[in-house]
Image 1 (tube, rainbow, N blue to C red):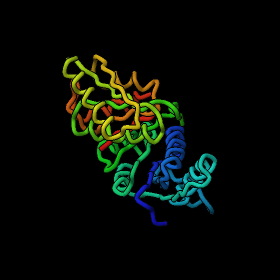
Image 2 (spheres, rainbow, N blue to C red; image 1 turned 30 degrees about the vertical axis):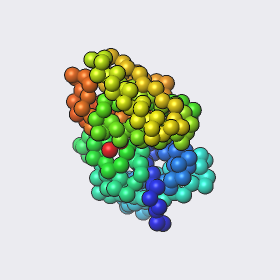
Image 3 (spheres, rainbow, N blue to C red; image 1 turned 180 degrees about the vertical axis):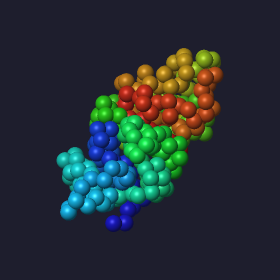
Image 4 (cartoon, rainbow, N blue to C red; image 1 turned 90 degrees about the vertical axis):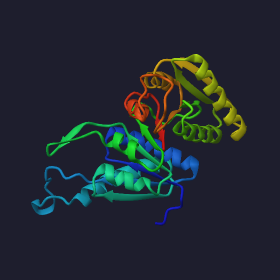
Length: 267
């Protein structure tokens, strides 16, 4: 199958976290007119007996996981074009490679487990840091929720500007309000940043209802709190920060396990 440019890639391993990510990705892709690629990366673990007592090939085990994923998608979006793919080059590498030709990559939150002495669980953070397109991270409790506002963390940096554009486009398509959240330690500068963001949205996305909120504190806890009532929280992969405790690139990683709604990290 040849994909159009609008392709959503979702990493799937059958876990509860991956199921939540797949459900979200299927509904979102159907709404956006995107195609869906379900990617399972086969990890070599203890041999399981197959036919005749021989170890079951990784590809066969992967096909079972992928068919399970396909069945979930068909219940949510029966007409959605779906391709199934098995990767064998490592989880992070496969997903980062897939992101080169994707519009969006969707993952579950990290699940820490050991395979042959190796600890897995940093996959999500690695993909968030290295992907070539926006990455959405979905926790099992987030679910598929529509009608809630889009929240974007904004600090005036180039990364935050890309996040603002992504967030405004989603808010406009879904017909929901956009909330620009500015975490700050100095209110005067934060007010200027918030006003600039709102003015840009009014100019470029006049159909979107937008407001800014100033919240004193550092970005990760502020946005974690804000994520309670929104449909998705959006941040840039890199930012300069308006708070002394904010390190470049740290907000997305800090929110991976702390966001109560789906988290989009925009590159």
